[in-house]
Length: 186
Image 1 (spheres, rainbow, N blue to C red):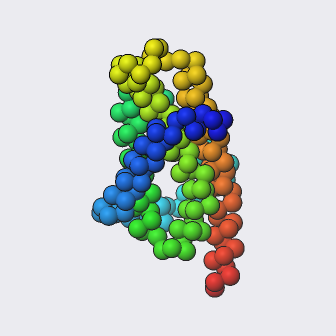
Image 2: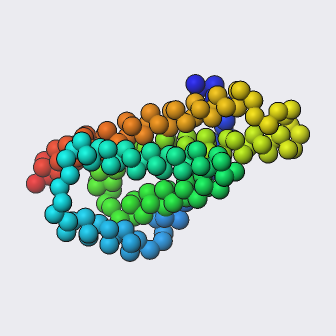
Image 3: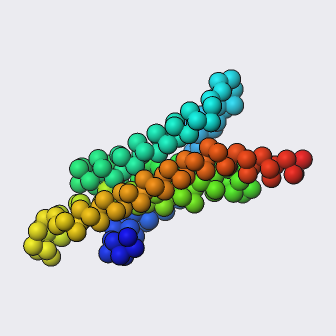
């Protein structure tokens, strides 16, 4: 597993760079839209059970994974780049909108798993196009080898596992952690 990650260091570093740059851009652009969404969420009287909330969060994250890694691979990295940027811009905006303690309590517990999942999905999405470019440049004899596909699937599987863990933490643990610490401050 880690050997596959080591072999894909360039692709992973590219994914990290895109994620980091987009997060920084997100921090500095107008957060009007996120404030509007936040206001609507506060005004909403709809309650969702934890189980349904978990399925919603997991579903949204799996859709992002699918767009970044699967459709991204099929689109020669275009969807990977686009969706990686969109997801990380939102993280930058969240960082700007929240206080340090709110970010730590409400976002960091699940982001520890979700951010690496997004980055690995990005690496998976870039993997296929990277191998095709290497083939066209004459650096390998086959377009895609079994090893290439195995590495792609390894990155994708690790990403999915991290997404499930992040969704579980976001829905079931983060609210309890935040409530515990915030009640102690009152």
